[in-house]
Image (cartoon, rainbow, N blue to C red; front, side):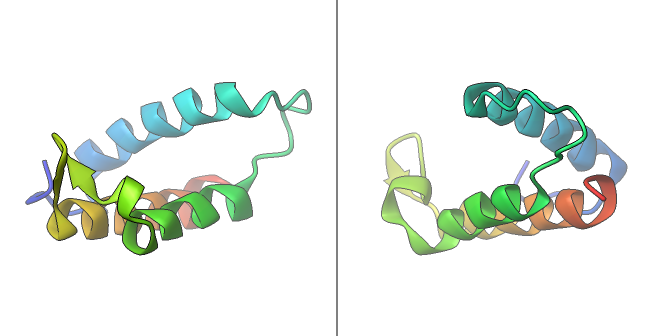
Length: 80
């Protein structure tokens, strides 16, 4: 997946599922509060925090960068 275009419709559909899953852990009661800034902050962790840069337990900078770009694209375009 990390070789796909992070802005493609296919990837953005997957990121929408990721966002919905993550959001369920936040306990946000107001459905109009889309938490764009919070999701973009999480995206930043993928490239700055080693706990988020691993895939299958091994560091994977390509995956981390891919997730960062895909999540920011989603926040910028869908969480307005």
